[in-house]
Amino acid sequence: MALKTDKDLKMYYSIKEVAAELSVTESTLRYWETVFPQLSPRKGANGVRRYTKDDIKTLRTIYHLVKERKLTLAGAKKQFKYGGPKESAENVSEVIDRLKAVREELMGIKSQLDFL
Image (cartoon, rainbow, N blue to C red; front, side, top):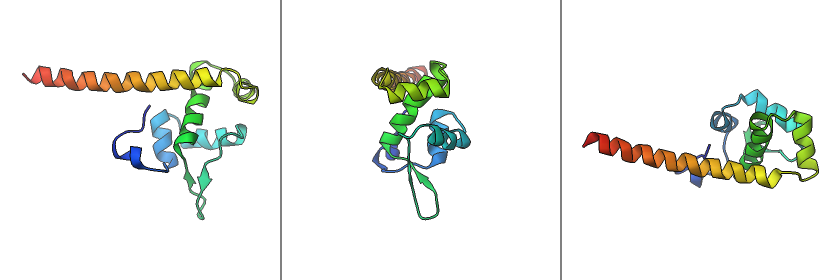
């Protein structure tokens, strides 16, 4: 789930990019904004959402709580409100990102070995 390559240099990400990265719909992201006050991407003059890396980190935590831990939105909101396992959810998200990067690297090495 890590936004990579030249995108690492970007300051803002579109809702389309973030939705694709998290495998959720754009409407899901917009709805989560209404539920979680911690999530408030900047909006341009034309109302286009611009997500920062911190916004994406928050979204990953929400995703982890709702999609992976299967909490209701109300339950996930309580976790944020009372500072529950937010840090552990963020840590899990970071570990998953690192493991995916390692997997991609190993797949690249495998491809090179298969070529030989």
